[in-house]
Amino acid sequence: MSDQAARKKLVWEIDAKIQQDVARPMIAHYNAATCLQPRVQGFVRKVNGSYSDWRMENVWLKQ
Image (cartoon, rainbow, N blue to C red; front, side, top):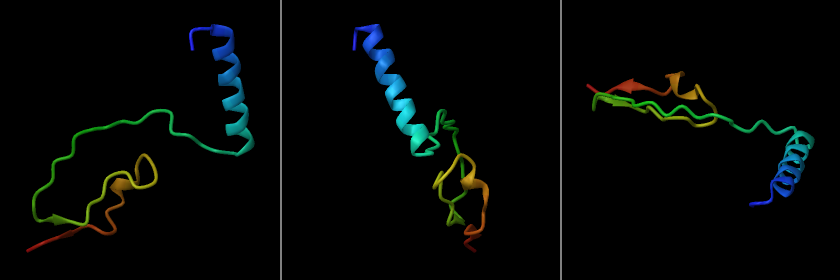
């Protein structure tokens, strides 16, 4: 949208909808490299939040 006033109006409408829905959009996403050994099993990246991949409850070592 090249019209700045129309773009600003649209952003305000989107913001109002998000606030009414009590949504929490992810504003930033940090995508870092992860290196794992082949014997590390069950590790899943970013399921439902920024730090959910560090829980390690389903991670196990294959012997």
